[in-house]
Image 1 (cartoon, rainbow, N blue to C red):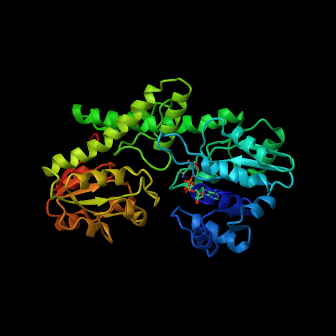
Image 2: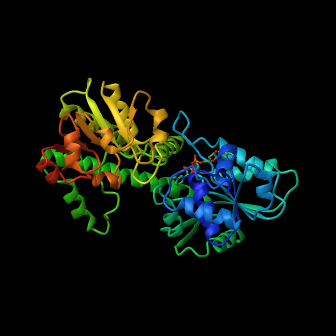
Image 3: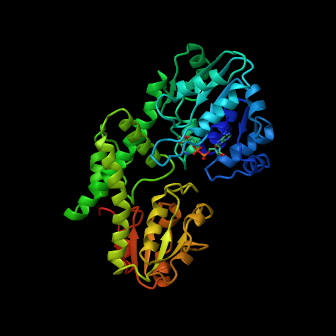
Length: 425
Ligand SMILES: NC(=O)c1ccc[n+]([C@@H]2O[C@H](COP(=O)([O-])OP(=O)(O)OC[C@H]3O[C@@H](n4cnc5c(N)ncnc54)[C@H](O)[C@@H]3O)[C@@H](O)[C@H]2O)c1
């Protein structure tokens, strides 16, 4: 596994659990030292237990030595990050680096599997780099195998995937990879590499569009007096629509949706197609952050000098990831408009701190709302649903709540004396 981040570590630990011997490589030696000592640097349900179990059994190990790891392996997964460059395109320098490093260590037939989300044509590109960098020809295949796991439920998503997509022109590689994944009960969809690469972007952009659509409907619900939760339920019964991804909020974020939408837009532009729909999705998403801030501003009668208690900084619940987190974005905007923010998140504070200079960080949700003029709930952590809101009411300077995730019960809160605003209700 080359690249031991969210995807690499989850894939590595899960493949070890399926009975394989896995070595995870990373160039970050601190991360490798921590993992080798049994410390998992990210928060993901079930991951620490799985990684520790297989570290102890010897099925899972960690190293910075890519050459040794590759030469001893039959399958080589590329799971490095592909962050956006300044044009929105996926920066594939790390994938290229890895391809060059792999080339020198191919000593017998290997299947090289690209799991990173990469621009269309990258499977071919990796193949070309390996071919050019190899000193002596050895047989190998490069396969596209996009990853669909979601942070927060990554281990169970890996173990129980909706589908496994394999993009390859080599029957041998497909057979071997099918064998590797034996034990996972999921439809195996085999296609050409370009289509496999496209499936990943098309899926993420579709989901981002679905979230944006329900956000737009929520905004309209506010205007007409409908309740978006009722509307989403009523829509979801239609099997063509489904219940998933119809929860409005402060806009989508995270390490994948925004970057993959921008990358797909760039791909479209490069191929002369105006993907206006997707352009609109990104624009409406930006507006959604803005609408959340405007709601807080309106409810509290201006933000200058206001004390705001922010609950939640992770881009969604059950993760410590704050990459492109709408919660962090909204918090930043609140501070830019003069608010004094004290924030709390059960898992993401360490990652959020460098992003939010000037913010205060509390030890608990209760501490975050002490003397606050307004409470803003930005990430849907379960523990925020079960706070003692009577106590919260007593701690706050003014009883105002903006629930940007529709987590709380407006009836109960209004009875307690709060002025409550959710999204689209
Ligand atoms: N995070 C997700 O939920 C998710 C889901 C599906 C797909 N993806 C895609 O998977 C890829 C990896 O994402 P991630 O979130 O795991 O990234 P990450 O940033 O968490 O991890 C990437 C790791 O690769 C390492 N790395 C970078 N260059 C290296 C090199 N040359 N040699 C060895 N190690 C190197 C980094 O040090 C880092 O530890 C991305 O393309 C992403 O778009 C991510």
